[in-house]
Amino acid sequence: MGRPLCVCMGKRLLYLLKFKKQALTGKKMIVETEVEDKRDVAESISAIWDVLSEEQRHYLVENIEIRIYQKNEILYSENDEPEYLMCLLEGKVKVYKDGAGKRNQIIIRAINEKSLFGYRPAFVGENYHTGAAAIEQSRVCLMPIPMIKNLIKQNTRLAIFFIQQLATILGEADSLTVNLTQKHIRGRLAESLLTLKEKYGVEEDGSTLSIYLSREDLANMSNMTTSNAIRTLSAFASEHLIGLDGRKIKLLDEDALEKISVLG
Image (cartoon, rainbow, N blue to C red; front, top):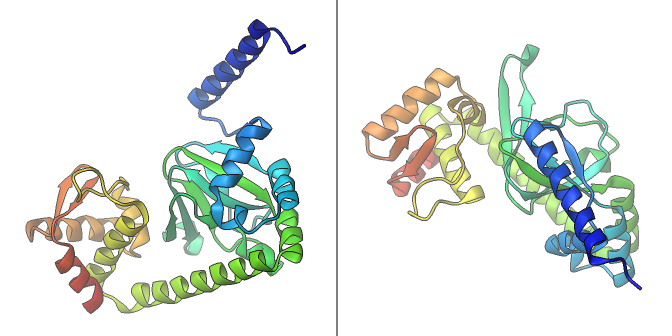
């Protein structure tokens, strides 16, 4: 016979209360999910799940962890040893590089949902050259690096997928180098706004970015000072290219922003 319904419900209630308490205290937590829940998560990462055999899928489900990170919480820091391939399930995460003396920060890229990150250094035996932090409360799937390497050895299709992923990252890095070194301030900020739309989309009005970055984060993403970001945003607003409402940014003339981005 199964356990009495009251016992199961009581256990579930205690779990929910514990989850709520941890979320309110703002502490990092590991969400202990049932195997069925972990399987749902693994299936949602279709780029990996779809190329695995049933035995490999079982191996994946048994080894993944799900964690909740609070706003501004660090997922990993520069010089940390990579332990996991990460997949953002919900929320928003930034990958960044600290400048000299950690006085300045450059946001290398913004991670969107279902994107994989945090694994490149592990494939070449390096520590992290960047850091990652949650922009807002985020739910992340952690896949141990040794497990991923084992699966790659067993599965050619998975190996090809990661080759394609790394090639894409390299292309994005080349584009970022051009954006940060050759474009002027207006071009860099226009590029950042368009990138945020591409990564996170817009709200129901069709024009307001669905991510609310601080002016400092937007400046870090565009490799400029916060004061320059504020002045350039104000200039864009006065030219009716964007609308500003606190941290909310509405893209009013994407064609003009695209032209500014291209011309630099």
